[in-house]
Image (tube, rainbow, N blue to C red; front, side):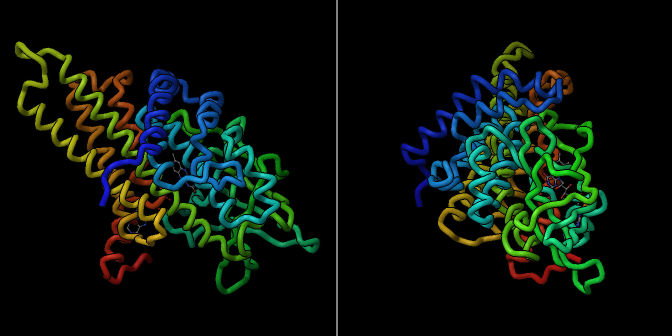
Amino acid sequence: MHFELTPDQKDLQDQIHRFAQAEIAPKAEELDRKGEFPVELFQRVGEMGVMSIPFAQELGGMGLGVFESVLAIEALARADQSIAVSTMVSMATGLTVARFGSKEQKQQWLPDIVAGRKICAIAGTEPDAGSDTGGFTTQATQLGNGQWSLSGEKAYITNAGTPISLFTLILAISSPKDAERKKFSLFLTPNDARGYTRGKGYNKMGWRSSDTRQLYLDDCQLGEDSVVGELHGGRHLLHKGYQAARIWLAACSLGLAQASLDHALTYAKERQAFGGPLGKLQLVQQMIAQMALKVDTARLLTYRAAWQIDQGIDDMGALSMAKLGATEIGTEVANLAVQVSGGWGFMDDCPASRYLRDNRICTIGDGSSQIQTMLIARACGLDVDFT
Ligand SMILES: Cc1cc2nc3c(=O)[nH]c(=O)nc-3n(C[C@H](O)[C@H](O)[C@H](O)COP(=O)(O)OP(=O)(O)OC[C@H]3O[C@@H](n4cnc5c(N)ncnc54)[C@H](O)[C@@H]3O)c2cc1C
């Protein structure tokens, strides 16, 4: 068992870390305040090659593994979790097209995504159903000419409404309305498709510079070739896409947890109290030691799950442990960083307060902590009922 990165992995990690600390971290507070998606910065991330890491070389990618992309997302999130999440959602969506899309779909839609010039989204959640993916109601109806007409609403969707959004993969019921069992398909919906509109961005607690909107489909007509993967196999593909995204969401929380520890350590060394630095006080040392332990736990869980994915080991329990463990730890460590920062920790301009706000969604989105807990119990061999 090796715990060391290879020289190439270390180089990649260093390169992205240096870039993120120089070009992203200094802007994170302002981006959070403005709440606008930073197009140029995202494209700089693309120029650094981050988006391309896990894509095959014939698609313009680097052909590296999930593990390398986890190192990159962690480094981005250590600078700003919002840009890391925008990147990883586009990565997971693009990879869904790369894995399951037709040759034509890949040729037409992936080059700009892999290069990070454009961004894409995946839409499952609806106003009345999130974790319960079987409860989605957006309906796709096949017309006489083979085309599809989509109608319905999606809620809380990342990346769909930026100036560089290219397409959204939309999950919709593709079986007839009166069918006994609902079947779903995944539709590649270009941003300029007629009948597809995006609502105003939400006012959010965190991830303020990442784009999140409600989507509306009103007789949105799409070609026969808009179905990604097997017709009626969309729910399975959405779950695969969500599963893939879980490891990167874990990496987002890991990077943020590391940033929280970095911040608390610096503050504990610089802040003077009771005749010396805060860090000389034993109970502050205890908080820092707890943070270090938790960050390491998140890192080990996340790296193991990423490594397993690259080895082709299908271990849902380990993936869920990484997602549950790292995202919960992100919130715990950010909260401790607020505590170490004292009154300043409660102010908007303290990075720790942003870390706490940003990470709060990570235990809810992409399979909440409760859903991950049930998956772990199932992996332990228990009969888990999701209904
Ligand atoms: C900023 C942001 C970005 C997002 N981006 C996207 C995106 O890009 N694409 C997308 O499709 N969605 C996205 N989402 C939606 C997100 O994935 C959902 O909010 C999440 O899946 C939870 O669904 P819900 O909000 O409907 O909550 P619900 O499913 O209603 O859950 C409410 C609570 O009940 C718990 N719960 C639910 N079912 C069970 C169960 N069976 N057993 C025990 N507890 C349960 C949950 O854990 C949660 O605590 C985003 C959300 C936010 C806030």
